[in-house]
Amino acid sequence: MTIGTRLFTWARGELVGTDSLGNRYYRERGGGKRRWVLYRGAAEASKVPPEWHAWLHHTVNDLPHEQPPVPWQKDHVPNLTGTAAAYRPLGALERGGHRVAATGDYEPWRPE
Image (cartoon, rainbow, N blue to C red):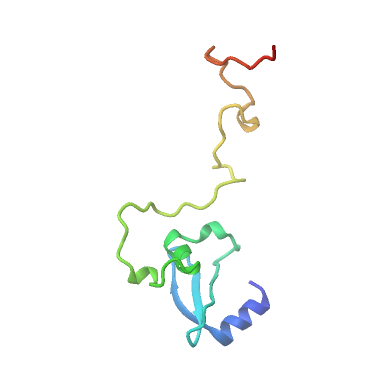
C-alpha cells in the first residue's frame, strides 16, 4: 500500500472486517460510499474472496459475516497463472510441446 492509502485509511477509514487470507476491508466513516481493501502481503486482486468482492463493488450492502452462507459457493482459490501449479494443456511448451495426433474427424476448409 502507498503512504497515501495508509494516511487515508487512518484518517477516514472504518475497519469492517477481515477475510481468511488476512486482508482487511474498510469503508469511509460517516456514511461515505468508498470501500477498499488492504491486502496482506502483495497486492493481488485475485486474493479477494467472492463474498468480499461483491461487497467492495456495491453488489451487496450487507457485510459477508451478516449474509447467510451460500452452500454452492466454492472456497477461494488464488490465480495460479505464472506459478508451477498453473494449468498447462496438452501441447503447451511447458509440457513438451507435443499433442496427440488428430483423430480424423476434422476437415479443413479448402477454397475451390
